[in-house]
Length: 499
Ligand code: ADP
Ligand code: MG
Ligand code: MG
Picture 1 (cartoon, rainbow, N blue to C red):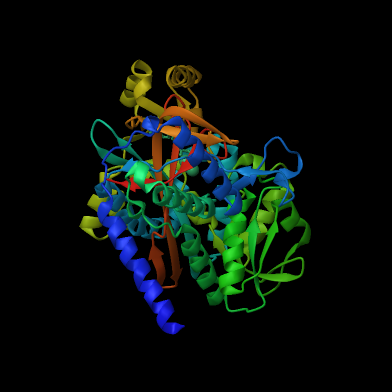
Picture 2 (tube, rainbow, N blue to C red):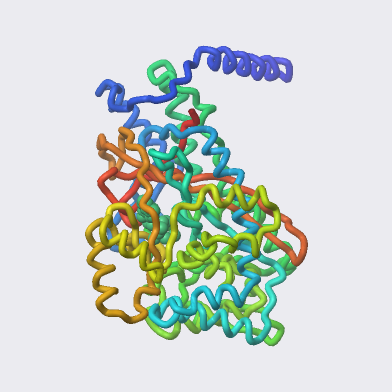
């Protein structure tokens, strides 16, 4: 039996190699050229695969789907085929990920830099002000975070004209889709394999996506370092979350591969059942918490009352490892992104000159609104800029003529309200045809894409235990849409095909 099995295995390898040799790698592929009969089959197979492999979200038409798992699910919106992406830029994004991880850590340790850079914003932005208050309290009590866990996602667009990979933003809180993005990469590999003769695309050109395992690994190592085998990992979640399956993927890997229990609580629930012991241990419903993973708490709407702020402070005061800590959270704000892009600032945090060059290479133009010549230019040519408040989660930015109007309004007001925003160079990525799947239907669209590269980082005092980029998320949206969020309904999940 053993011999037979070995023979079979060898046979399979040979078959795979001969198949591989047949594959013609096409640099660009037009999904619109797929015959309708074939397309129908692929769509059908993709929908079945998604349902069986947990590429799912709660159905927005259902009341319960954001609260109760297992009911009223629908496949997550996805692109039928992976988007072509240049291998050089892919490698560049992977290469800078650990440098960005390290940068966030270094910036987070400079409390004065964070407070000073955000001081004007604090006066006019109540939400940022509340975050800074928590940060100040931690500085006052000289709170040290010896175990620092970063679960980031750095997002990029490929600027068509300059052919450069430019960072849109770096997310340090609630970096979403580590779970579902892996499923999409697998779905695309499956389709390329199954329809090889028709598509002539090489499934191996879709990079392996280990985002969920990488995040779970970093969470598990942080949990282990906390050194209480009975402690749990707390997922802080929104009261209603249709993207819960993305989160459950992470919880499941933690349970099945690391035997770590996760619990899910809203900020209000943490307030109700959370308590701090004298030694700093956070108890939630009587259970000790080793690690707090935030999938809520990044938006003002997450704090409808004082209770939620109390819960956030309680968690920050505790000895639990937080992803993110308040200083990691602040280090990921748009104002800090803009401050880091100023000449000479990176040098304060990064020693290695090559690393500085690599980081700076992917910075787009970023400006504060007190730079009057830029503001004037943006009023004249608003289409070349994006105006961004200190917000997360999509749907908050200002584009086009609204940039002009907003800037004129701020100029007239003449107060400090302008400190709530930054200005950013608008990036124009190339358009590509794509087939977008939503609620079982396929749509042919002209699209643009945004590549997110996940970063995992774990540091225990001076020792860097994890610093890598385990996976990626491509998001593709109709080119006429300004915003890019999948959960916000603008984009679909995608993967990349290296060319
Ligand atoms: P958020 O934290 O809300 O996701 P982002 O900075 O990522 O904020 O902006 C949201 C979306 O707006 C992005 O996903 C992208 O589609 C678009 N966007 C942001 N900045 C730019 C830019 N400089 N040029 C073009 N599009 C942008
Ligand atoms: Mg963001
Ligand atoms: Mg974003």
